[in-house]
Image (cartoon, rainbow, N blue to C red; front, side):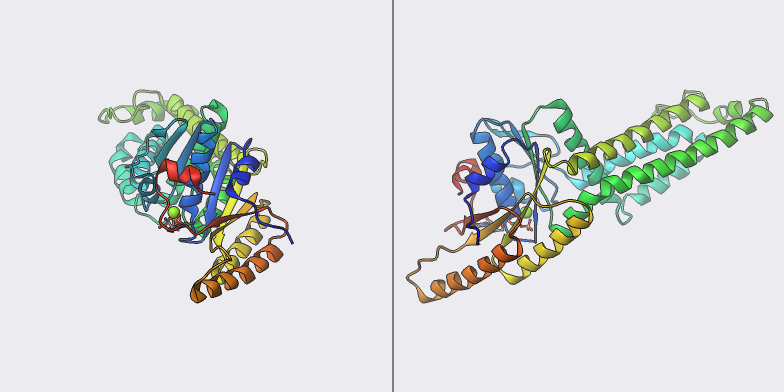
Amino acid sequence: MQTMQTLNKLVEQLQHIPIVFVGGKGGVGKTTTAAALASQFAAQGQKTLIISTDPAHSLGDVFDVKLTNKAKTLSDNLDALELNPDVIIDAHFAKVERTISGYANPDMLPKIKQHLQLSKSAPGAQEAAMLEAICQHLVDATEHNEYQHIVFDTAPTGHTLRLLSLPEMMAAWTEGLLSQQRRQAKLKGAAEHLAGNKLAENSLTGSKRDISNPFADAKPVDRWQQAVEVLNKRKELFRKAGALLHDKQKTALVFVLTADNLPIEETRRAVTQLKQADLAPAALVVNQLIQPQQQDAFWQQRAARQQKMVANIEHYFSHYPLYAIYLQQTDVRGVAQLQQLN
Ligand SMILES: Nc1ncnc2c1ncn2[C@@H]1O[C@H](COP(=O)(O)OP(=O)(O)OP(=O)(O)O)[C@@H](O)[C@H]1O
Ligand SMILES: [Mg+2]
C-alpha cells in the first residue's frame, strides 16, 4: 500500500511541467488546490500564471481580487486571469464574422450578422469559444516561454474531459471545413473563368462599404485566401494544443477528490474516459482529510470512515501518485495562506 505524500512533493513532481490542469467533482477543492500549487510554484521563484475556466468567479474570491480576461499580478512571480465566457464569446464571434465576411457575398452581410448574433446563445457556442481561448493560452505559454507554469483551475469533471478531447476533434472539423471550401473555390474559379470574371466584379460593386470587414476592399480571390488563412491558423492552433495535451512532459492532469464514495466513483469514471482519449492523470490529490487522532467521538468516527475510503483510493488508484491535503480550520484565502497549505 502506498502512503500519500504532502502537497510540496506534488510541487516537486510538477517542477518541470509547464501546463497543469486541475480537475475533479464539484466542490472537492479544485480551486483551492490549483491556487495553492500556483502560489507554491511562484514562491519557489517560478513564474506562474493561473487561469480559471470556471464562470463562478471563485478563483478571484480565493485570492480576494477581481480577476478579468487580462492577466493581473498577484504577487512576485504569480499572475492570474479568469476567462469570462461573455467577453470571449463576443471576441470570438467578431472574429468569425470577419472570417465569413471574407468569402460571403457583401449583400448577405446584414443577414449573416443577425445569424451570428443569435448563434451566440446556441448550445455549445460558449464552450467552443472558451476552448479556443484555452488552446491559445496553452500554445502561447509554451511558445513564448513567458511563464514556467500555467495552471488551469477548471469547472467540474465532465466539462474538463470534453475540453481535453475537443482540440483534436476541432482540428479535424476545421480541416473538413477547409476541404469543403477548397472544392467550392475550384467550382467558383471555373464559373468565374466561364463568365469572363464578371461574377467577381459584380460582387464588389453596388454594395455599401463595410469598415468592420477588413476584407471588404480586397478582391474576392484575396478575400478568399485571407479567410482560408484564418481557418488554417485555427486548425494549426487546435492541432498544437491537442499535441501539447498528450505530451506528458508538457501537460499534467491533476485530479482532486475527497475521501467519499461519490468523488471516488466520479474519479474512477474520469480516469477510464481519459484512457479512451489516450490520457492519464499525473497525480491525484485527496483533499479535506481529517487528522486520524481525534478526542471527540464524532470526529473520531469521521476520521475512521475516511481511513477506509483512503484504503479504497489507494487500491483503485495504485498506478498514480497520491497526495493528501488536510482539512483546515478555515477556508484557505490569499497567497500567503495558500503557500503554507501542505
Ligand atoms: N483543505 C481544505 N480545508 C478547508 N477548507 C477547504 C479545503 N479545501 C477546500 N476548502 C473549502 O471548500 C470550499 C470548496 O473548495 P473549492 O472552491 O476549492 O472547490 P472546487 O472544487 O473548486 O469547487 P467548484 O466545483 O465549485 O469549483 C471552499 O469554501 C474552500 O475554501
Ligand atoms: Mg472551483
